[in-house]
Length: 427
Image 1 (cartoon, rainbow, N blue to C red):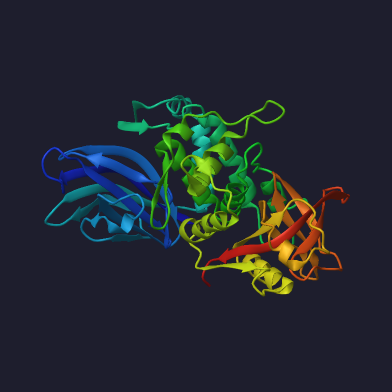
Image 2: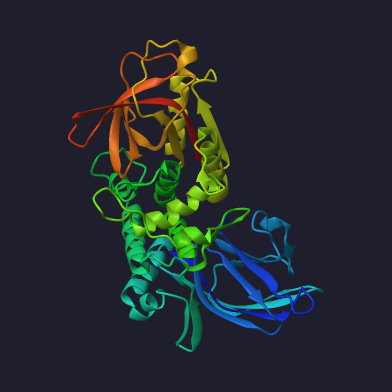
């Protein structure tokens, strides 16, 4: 069972800023203790009413905070108007006042309940958007229209992407994720099917692809809200920041693959947005240390995990310790990533030479085949699932794996693991 909050209007009764300067307002929504990635952000004049139709499903409680003039990189440094408001299970409607001596805002809301889960409610909303010609029509470009006496603006920020394709993909992912569980992995499990929905090809966005897959796997409803906010606003919120995509990225078409088809629109939407966190001056940094900083920020700021650490096989960490952490993250509902080198490294090389080699790829650890067989585990990689077998002979600092396809045949490509990042929610 879920409760949900509907916000239909925000009104500016008194501005914080004097003169003609508009108030820069962000409504921060925390659902069950975790900030929503959907960005409710608007510029207000005195007396202005902003009509919207935004629904937030929740289980226990929902908290609202109104912030003014907050810089993107530090939302907490903005000016909070009034006090944070907490709403709990109830069937009611009315107005919430955020007011102090400097500014005054009113939010119109309603609370209701549903026998469905928050994820099911999000899936229903996606289905409505897909099937309603008005909704899909007005995602083609920014327009204003009237429906049920409410003026809604759908602001599609990505000129070359098809909103309907994106909603269909989000719906497919959500339906698969809804049936996933933490049971033993097999090739027919929902997690295996979910992993096939995310493919970085033809980009080099391996870190962003790993993060996108784990987002949908572990927090599917928030994954949906993040993608919707990116599509409609070009932004999304983390625990402490607003991330804004670059206009030049939003103007690009999804890149072409070798067969002439284009990268999935929903994948391009999210992966290109996540990838910009490791970009500088328009050129992606190749440093694996910087990419691990992205993963750490993603785990802490997007997923809200408190237990985040990197286990390097170069820092006196053992192979059993690395895989113990990977399994702990998996069992606690978190995620783990492995840094790998995609070409065979001669195991007879001196250790100082091996240490000069740096990882070229990042993959997501999905889980062991079973608790009794930890030597065979699975990873998500280029939109597919592979089983990896740990050989009997291990190099003291790195591990060489054969990986197996669905048929069980050994793929001749071998990976070498250098370390891994793990994260899971606080118990």
